[in-house]
Image 1 (tube, rainbow, N blue to C red):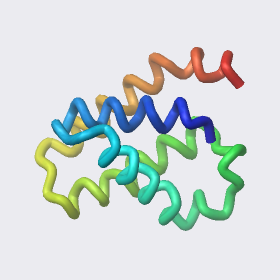
Image 2: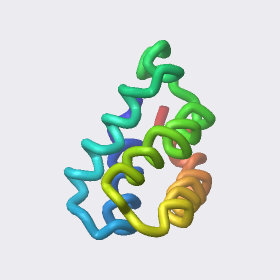
Image 3: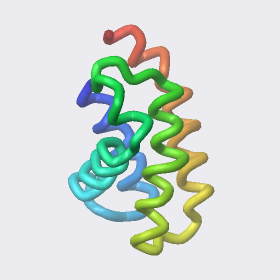
Image 4: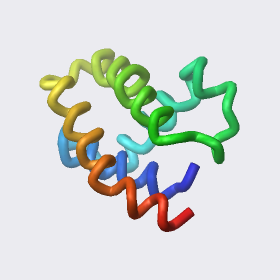
Length: 93
């Protein structure tokens, strides 16, 4: 997976929960590597649907564990931003 995508997701998350981007990057990476569905895939073969799945499941669970408020709105915001930027990532690969 492109580090640019991880940076974008962690940046959006950092803005949304007012935490440092580095913390959010680690949180997303944990969600990514702990997901049974995604772990079976090579990191360079992740699709947009895989990312969306991790965000809606693994990342959401991580946010619940650390008691972040408005999780559903945050998840929706991250996915909406990724949809807007999806063409840019496609062009870079």
